[in-house]
Length: 162
Image (cartoon, rainbow, N blue to C red; front, side, top):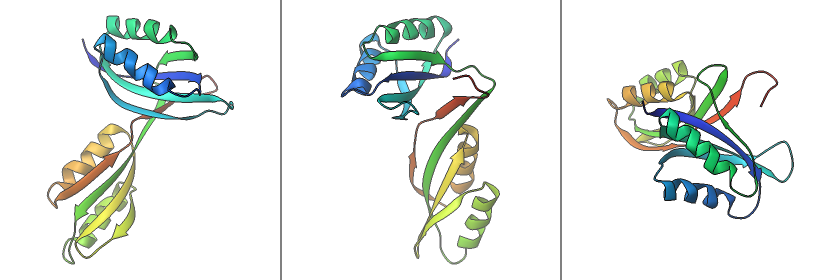
């Protein structure tokens, strides 16, 4: 059964490492739904988190293929539990003098921050899991969603282990 999985990749931060990893997925016919990357606590290394839609057999094959890439140090598929997953979203919503306070109240309930106010719209920043962000988008549809920008999922295992 195919479903979304988050894969952690630690690699040497060399030019083109992200492109080489995505190229591998492309050649094999796997789809990367989301990707985030950044530095690690260890200088010279990058941390990439990819969200892929795959079944168990494909996921195992993906891991083996990634490990073959030069500069890849670690590959880990995050389990369903004991993992903190977050995504950042900026959402621009239509807002006038009648709806602005309602949108601000809803954003507050979702622990969102208002980043910009214009005469006809608001920009709200939200951080959370995918379900939380999806729920906020669903509510904002009634007001009129003008634009959405989302990062990929960033994940980290709970406890001391990587």
